[in-house]
Image (cartoon, rainbow, N blue to C red; front, side, top):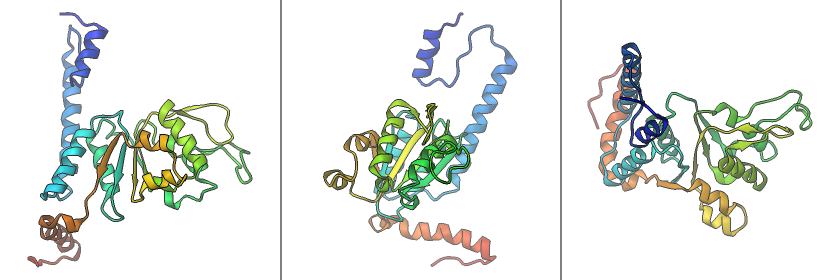
Length: 252
């Protein structure tokens, strides 16, 4: 019959999406229910846009994705060979998580020039370096309240790794050349096809950053190890090809 802050916190911890003390306003309740139903429909339609693999390894990966997606505080390191769909896994975690309505920002760390990586990620202030003619927000700013996906994270320089580690630990960062700190309210997902343990032993990757990124490890299997999915997956793509090419090919 009454509401208090400890009660609300306990309810949310146990999985409640919202908490309404009496007297309850009907229109407010209806608005919350509509929002929840809309969110569920969006997730269901997103899931239906992809082929759900049935092989044991792929189903295990899907189970782990569903498990970690709501755990917003966990950093996830997605590992697997090039071309196995690591970004797709990251997008699935984002879509099934609590930040699905917020931006998903993907960064290919392998394509970032070493000397500009920090500026691209954290932004810079006017005059921070030659050519910095105005303030520029970085990728962390673009992903604020949402998800930042760092693909091929092993390519970052040691200096950029230090800045990233602080952003992950303290949830704050300073743009290049800036004096004021910015808040990093985001979920971090990272991916690599590199042996980061070897990179650590060779002094190319920070061990403390590795442990921060690897709070929940995921491995994306090769398609050749998921033989049960090869023909069904081909059929799934065939349906799209039929629509695009206005054909009616039946199968293989």
